[in-house]
Image 1 (cartoon, rainbow, N blue to C red):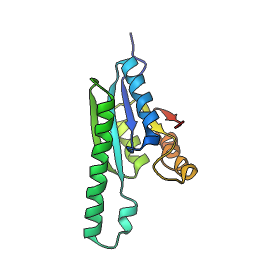
Image 2 (image 1 turned 90 degrees about the vertical axis):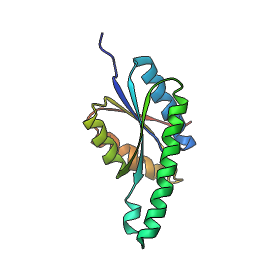
Image 3 (image 1 turned 180 degrees about the vertical axis):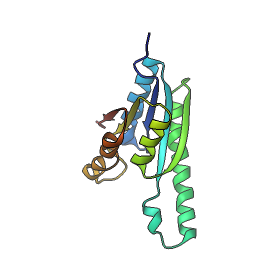
Image 4 (image 1 turned 60 degrees about the vertical axis):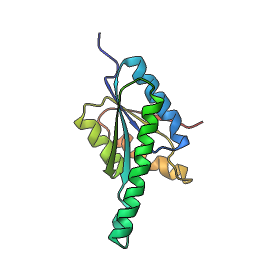
Length: 144
């Protein structure tokens, strides 16, 4: 019997608004017996215009720590399921869709809202770009 999904990428930013997407992604993975990738992407775009390399390095370290906490949170929510947790960097939608293509991911799960209060702008941003760029199915989970 063929599995509906074999590899699921759950994009996380570690926020509470992202929690429903993580929960739904894990629920689907559990039901399908799918492999799970928990991915946090450090958005390097704002760092490119930073004034000093020291500032950039400090901010990058902070973001990496935040990313490690976010993917570790997914791993903890997964209970006994095996989760490959990754902190990557670059432009989030591009990094996520490239990773998915390289790793045979057949479902990307992403939240409809990121950390920003500019929620409409941000759905327009990462989730919408992932939908347009992905070569696989994308599930956008709305925070309630």
